[in-house]
Length: 65
Image 1: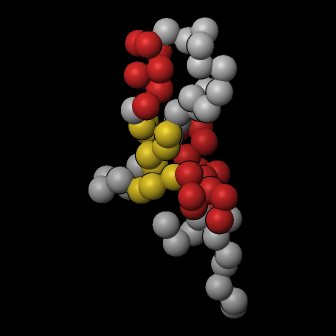
Image 2: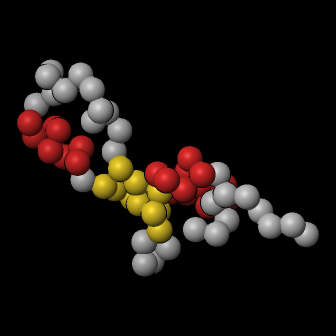
């Protein structure tokens, strides 16, 4: 059986935490920032844990992460 390939686009976006959960950055921080409040932009800087509904699919496309 050959090795499975990792989807590189997903590997660049997700990191595994010590407990095995997936950490990701938040969206909507790249452009059109003038209408967003400073509080909203500050909260978008923080990373968050991937939702349970997506975690199974993410781990499938990143078998070695």
